[in-house]
Length: 190
Length: 190
DNA sequence: GTCGTGTCAAACAGATCTGTTCGTTCGATA
DNA sequence: TATCGAACGAACAGATCTGTTTGACACGAC
Image 1 (cartoon, each protein chain N blue to C red):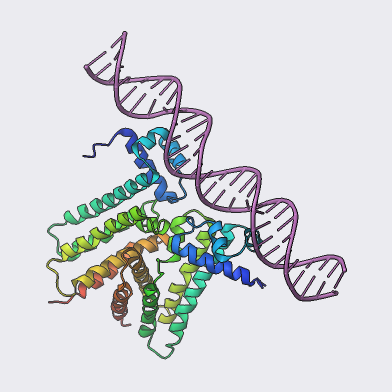
Image 2 (cartoon, chains in turn purple, orange, blue, green; image 1 turned 180 degrees about the horizontal axis):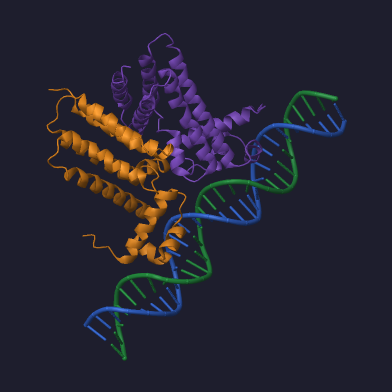
């Protein structure tokens, strides 16, 4: 299934990703996407029945890309203690927010633009699952307070994302990492 | 200056605040605002020369309202130790995210919708100042690491805001408060 | 060689959005 | 009572946005 990976489709998605993320979804019309991707409008509507479809696919890929990127780094530290593996998530975040075109969390942004849009809400909900799941898995068989620890770690991650965006802070992921260290050190020594 | 506080202007701003915050700025047209405020379009354009002016004023008031609300709670605890005063910020946040129409940080949302819009950027920058300033003031004459502590506290606040919005978490401010307690307890005991 | 598929270019339809204009109404005040 | 300011309602202009339609072209497979 889903053999649809033609060259035009890919070009459309790359352009959509770049424009939607950089300028916002509402602010970028279909005409911009087709102009900058070099695909004709009629062809674009063959590959994506509506703009909504294009947006949904944009979000799906954003989520997958980030999840894979973070997960790969964590997996690469297989023989590290869990603390180091969890902290490496914040190292990836540091890389991400350092990229010149960083403009915050694509899902927070999409949720802000389309608060009552069903497919966007689904895409956001889907994205919001993987990071706490990763932390949970790394922290092993859940103790009583691990739910709280996971939630706290995710919050620190989100806060660093927000600060990097709204304050243009270049160091927010470093700050977040230190807070995460503190949270991990304070874990109940069961 | 700025004696402009007529009844129509107030009705326009109240309606704009409700609609822009609930549904997003792009998604709400001027026609919605005038219809729901019961003000004619021509009158609205007397009070606000453009939609942009209305948006800027909406953000200004949102920022002021929240700043006043938080500051008042903190000031009410004048004889408490600083830790308690700082933690009370997260109690206010808990109240805010518990309100039924909560839909995230209005400034994060606006920044997501208008990434390159000068007046929105100004409004966001203006809002982003008061919370770290409040934390700094409470923490007293800045030690070497207090900048880091302030940034960490703000991040935790932002993270709780994001989680409350994107995950519909009702407990995120409580989680954030616990993290803040940890951060404060770990302060260098100078 | 013909058919089918994928693509393009351009015009168009219909909706929506911001902002303007114009004539009218109503109430306060001098 | 006459005047003036504030607001109204409705139509309009012009831009923009999503999505459709039409006709043509290129190219590979049968």
